Length: 319
Length: 276
Image (cartoon, rainbow over all chains, first blue to last red; front, side, top):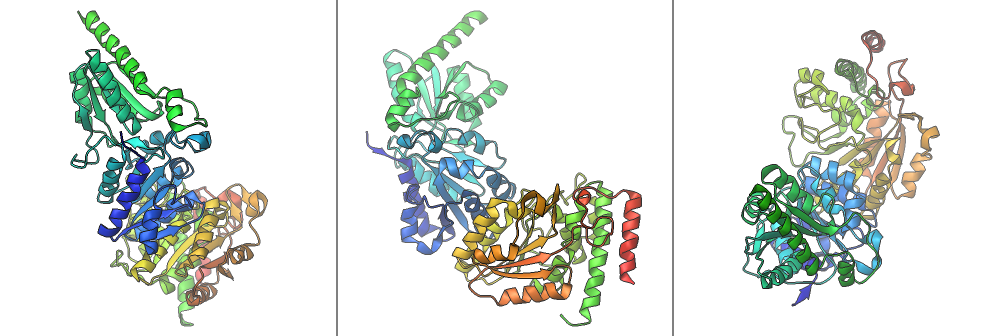
């Protein structure tokens, strides 16, 4: 499978917006190369602003640009652009309901060798908790390009979580993309795997393996974690009756939390959360780390079988 | 400003102080000290310097005033109502549900409130962002950002100070209400920030130091700032927290407490005496 990082998809989308959207501007805290905003900077130097290594000012300046009618993309490492800036994102961006787009590259374990301090594993939880914030995690570079372009025309604050490591391209050019509408990547009625980012590719591989064993797993690409596509998730709970969530992120309050919050109140079904288990990252090759942290297709297969057993047990109890 | 304007504006300042204290007393909570210290700084802006039109609060070419020290918002609300941005009667709804006059400002909750504030240290970055956008768009307007002396202990202020210098944002004018006190005591004892003017100069700004209660000097500083090219400007206004009320002046106890009815009466009477 061809591999490409979602940050590259973002960089291409931002570059395309430069041509179509004159009000789009970009800014960074000396990480525009890493975040691939440098392609936009090179093409549109008058529309790119550096604020130095100062993330709080980065977000505040973006808010000011938005106050004056621009559509700013504030780009940095996912950890720093969400972690050092929670207060700025909360008051200056979300409370003021400004049209600021925050692009966090190097999300999850994809920064690999740099280790725990740069590995963002909690930011979906933080961003999701902010009123008015939209939270997007593209599953491949192509979808990242579409998401970037879509969010320029989607009013209000948006957080885009991007990765550094190459991921398989699993969507197609012709696939429709709408913020807030999850994509069913594979049908199935025995169990549903709800995933984002690189875990969507892993979910598809897991589903193939499960199919060989006679288990039909539905795979849902939940690229928008907020607002949540309630209809698609509710249908999955009703029709499959068992859910596995999968994210390259802590299991506390991220994608799994969002799905559980919905289903426990509407249609409770057995669930398993595949993600990082309340711990920090560590140095290593990103592909290796996905194994170390149990985020591989075989981990999803195991979780699917667990949740299927729970579902069957509950059938027996109900008689 | 003509010589005949000065007594009029001094009287406006006294009346604003009376309004501010009535609002906070009625609300039963709020920040009198830091509201009273910034009155002349606002009078100079809204009665002289700012290019603005209360009847067209969304006029795209208006000068902008960003109140970064959000706890001083009773003063801003009183000024905006006096200027006709919204009805005076509404001032007495401060802080009480379901009011538009939030305890700390909400952007556009009433016309004229340009930014949210209350989490300190954020206004200057936003002023810079507007200035960058305006430069792209060929729009020339001034952006004033009022901060407290305690507030500028926030690191983001100095990040923004470097950004304004680096990008030569001469449309940005920071105004420091150096009223000498913060919540738990004198700024000098909590975390000394002096020498203030030298700090701003070292960051590449054009700094002007003034008596922030001398309206003529305040207005003169705004005029001087506007002539500066290629550099952002910082006006360090030396003020007195609780200005105008003897028992509030430079008393840290009046940072965030509302006057009781008898205290309000005494304060209003003291201010009334200043009008004669």
